[in-house]
Image 1: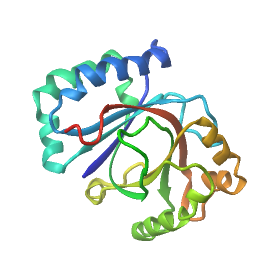
Image 2 (image 1 turned 180 degrees about the vertical axis):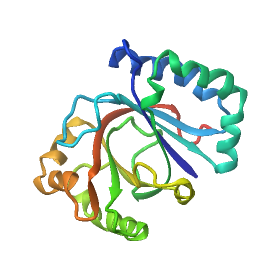
Image 3 (image 1 turned 30 degrees about the vertical axis):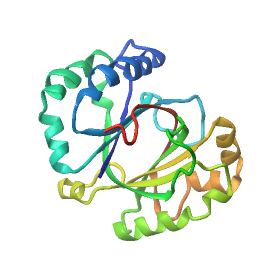
Image 4 (image 1 turned 120 degrees about the vertical axis):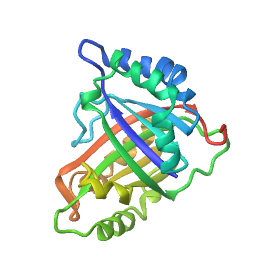
Length: 230
């Protein structure tokens, strides 16, 4: 399944609060959710948390979209619900020229073990790019091995890594190679994790990560189409 991340920010003159409110309460419900090929969909609004290496403040939210495969992704982009709906609505609230889109395949490192439906978690997104001399396969192995003990450090709800799909590299190098996603039950659990000096240091400096392409984004998720609803 394709796990797509769309990082976006408000158009000039629109406040961050108005931007995320419109995205969650109007665009997501009235336009994006009507695209039949989308299997799951959430919007996470940025929280005022600093980690020492945060994405630019221009980006105030991220959508996570799940689609079955490439065929359904293409169909979604050709659908009237997208072309005559969601796409036309975007310039009303989003600075589309700043948008960062990453198509990934997610690997669950720690699955959520709680009751259904999923709560709406606080999330730490970590955007990563490998060093130029490191093979992509080696980068992926190192990233997975590096996070094996994360559950011992905090009240971890879910942990996954979305690796940019191999097909992306046929068009050139993507801006990032991976999105690491750490879901926590609340901001107090996040505070505990960020206070862990060894973890906080690893966020900003890892031997296999390109120093200039490592950024963090803290947000609170809002489900629009939950797992199992489609």
